[in-house]
Length: 96
Length: 96
Image 1 (cartoon, rainbow over the protein chains, first blue to last red):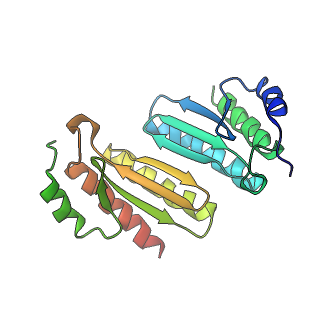
Image 2: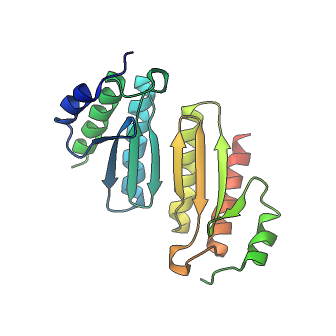
């Protein structure tokens, strides 16, 4: 899996509003009604991550979830990160 | 809920190996076999947190989970944090 260059990353990000490229990863922050809603979405994302065998760096404080995606083995952002980001957006869209 | 002083915090920590007091919170880091095991334990902790109406600041990277507990309203560590820490330890012990 090849590391994408910054131009490629920015092109992919055009279709992912709310995501940005920072410190060699793509990142987003999500806000929910409360902890239950936040953790419910995290659980759905966990299943997507596991099925893609590609996992986020993420943190949660009450109703906030911060997600950071990069591909360790490639030392940067790859298509795998964008696949997971799109799956995450699908999960969020389903909830609305 | 009253903020505990450092002496009280250290006393409580004596019965919580693996936890330490840092930056006005109590913290621990847990390592599991893989992501599935880590997220399974997170899910069980999430239910405990919700039932106590007291929630962690926590992060996960693959098989690692870092947890930080403090009581925002009290501006520090309170008994609520130790109640949740003990519930977290019970969850972990159950898994072994």
